[in-house]
Image (cartoon, rainbow, N blue to C red; front, top):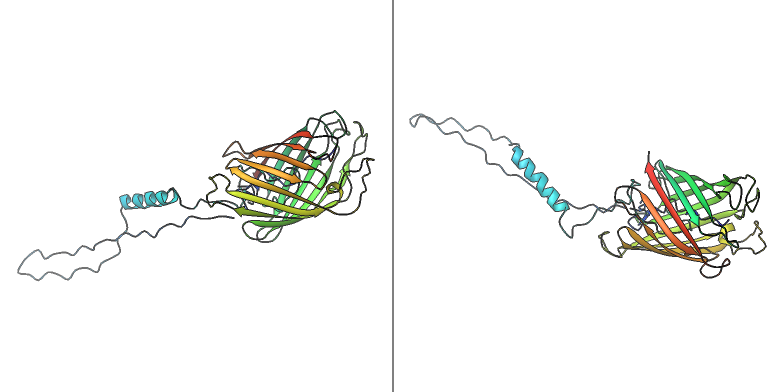
Length: 334
């Protein structure tokens, strides 16, 4: 069956918050890319105490040299309160944790296409997807994936390795799947590039309509870049981030072969556009090189990195009609 996993790594992370993902995430995330609020310089002035002479007829002793006075507990408390007030002042810059991949939920900005951002710094991710029917059949199927991000995409390069289970037994034998690799690099706070190779080593089991085979095209290489545009500084505002992804690839990014050929050659372009319509929601439209897809991505919880992405693929007739898909992913740092 046609692959549904979002090779964005989590698109869940690299969000329009990042400039990761999931925007980035993203809050990546986008790997998020941080805008730190500047604290005002706060000072405490103290007046040194001068000792007066006890006897009027005796000259008073010279005053002791003033020593710096340490703030009282109440002064320290005031300082902390003032700093907190500065951070919470409306209109103050909001911290956009895009330079790290903390497990903070952020919606995706891609459905199927890979993006320039990726997982690194020991980030582990899991994904699960479902489609109501596979191409040219009336049978439903699902996929799953697990992966890890290594290295450091900011100071060097990030390396993302994953395994995708291509079918739950409908299209091919349960457990059949393949390994994927991606190398990515951050070019500033809001830009990233990557090269990758999907399905470079396959594992096949018998069963399903395709038997021990797979309908995923061979030689699926790609190069891709993603740019996050900050249309508003405060990520809590509506339409605050726009993510544009463009790439070129082979294999799965080529038009489908009605005869089922898996060794198609050549290159084709693909791209995605994601808009952060609200902090937990992004709207996505993308061209995979074979068909048009559209959907939304939702990060329903602030403190748990779950991202849910319902979408429709094959809108323009790349297959045999539009198909509904639903994906979900989580990611954690170790």
